[in-house]
Image (cartoon, helix red, strand yellow):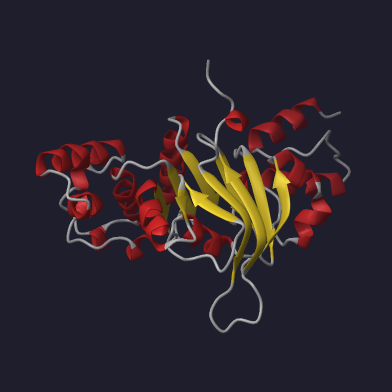
Length: 283
């Protein structure tokens, strides 16, 4: 019998987290709680400066919390130096600018980079790299220089490099922010596939359409939790959404515009499919 997420220990267990940048007069994150279980997709949203990217770096063991009652990632203590180093092995982090993570002269060398640092045997590296190239549709680009790739190809290469090292959690910090629509679709499809295979995902985004399919949404406001729950609950509170500077998914914004013109709908559709269905059933 498979256990439900509530019956298992969380992969990410953060309680009372604080982080303050050197010289700052206030915390970037203050008394924040976050738990993420195996197989969950948690979207983290908030306006610029709300602490989203800071949280992503802390979860990946790339920064040390200023303080916390508990801060563990895959069993590793993020308050300890050795714990953060160990967490970097289990928690992969992908940032919004892929060029910050592309370090080699060609695509396949970039994908192999983390495995080489972990001293995998060459034959195992070759097999894993070939698997990642096939998985992310990069076979024909394997010898291409990263700067010659499109934005979507760069981000898929960076993601392949992150996932080449087997992970338990994937943290994505606005991975589509610098991409055109085609590149965004490429990356979102790859993330959906990874989540569908059971990988826990923390997805930081300012694109509300990308938050709709999450199991849970956490909204930050000046470093603190302003909302935690499902997407329907967040977007149903339009006043809170406006206060947080988030906006609604495109379908929701369009539904509100239609309501202002006298075409009221039952509920607030959050996807275009739901909007079309509501319109078809509207009087």
